[in-house]
Structures are given as C-alpha cells and as structure tokens.
Length: 115
Image (cartoon, rainbow, N blue to C red):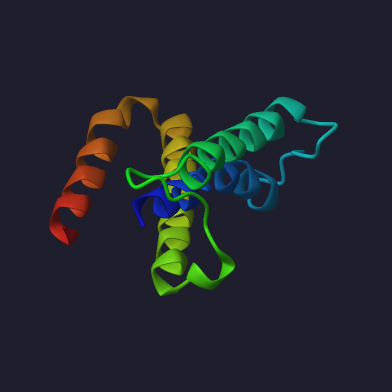
C-alpha cells in the first residue's frame, strides 16, 4: 500500500547521517549529534503514525506483520538509494560549489532516462 511505501521512504532521513558516520567517519552518536537523531526519530514516528496507524478511506488501520512483502523491500531499497544520492550530492556540492547546475542536470538526466 502507498501508506507503507511512504513510511519506508521516510527511512531516507536515517540513511544520510548513517552514511556520514560510516563513510566520512563523522561523529554521529547520540552525544555528538543528538539533534540529528531526534529529528530522524520524530520523522519516522510521525510518518508511521500518519501512514500506518491513521487508517484509510475504508477505516482500516495498521500494518500487519503478515503484510510485509517484496514491495516493502523495494521501497526500503528506494529509501537507501535516495539517501545515498542526497549524501553524495552534498559531498559533491561541498567540494565544487560552482558546479551546482551541472550536478543537478546530471541527476535529472539520469532520473529521466531511467524513468
């Protein structure tokens, strides 16, 4: 369901700081960057409440464990892909701030071609 995909897509907010900690070796523990993890938890919790517990047009609510499938895995992979894209874009922009337009054009072109 779309609500589940929206919830899993919100995992992007966890991917970026995790990549900063693993790849860039930045200190991203709870003591080092509490605001980052607070924001991530609030985002995931908020989207979870809105999308998974809010109910649909028919009044049905919640996500049962038996409803997890391949589509959910693909949605989670999509969140990791977008998070990685944001992370790499941020690194490229920091190294070459004058190249914002070419970097954006390349991203849009690849997205258009794959679509």
